[in-house]
Amino acid sequence: MAIKVLLNEGEELRIRLMGENHTTLQLFRSRLNDSKDVEYSNYFVGHPGLDEPELYLRVKKGKDPAKILKSLCADVSSEFGSAKLS
Image (cartoon, rainbow, N blue to C red; front, side, top):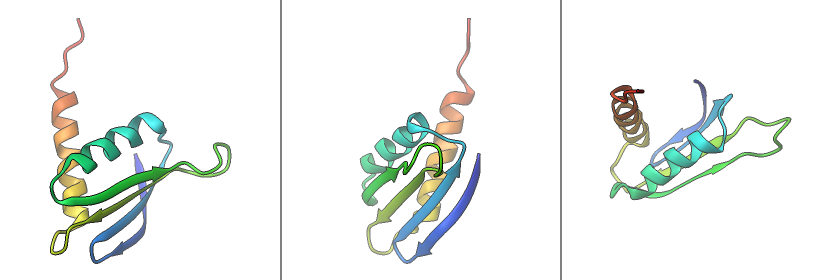
């Protein structure tokens, strides 16, 4: 998954996720909003044929949004990495 950072200032992070869709973005948004360190998270898809989707994250004062997102990615990777298909 290619990621382009659009904004990384203070408690805010906005990234563009190349080639992703509602499924991935909803997973991130849902898990981020469940975090006690996150004030708000949402995603925006724009025009389906023209725009790559963006994820926006605002965290509580003193927290690092990039660290929170990286931690979430590690958790999701671990969770799905141990899945077994039978």
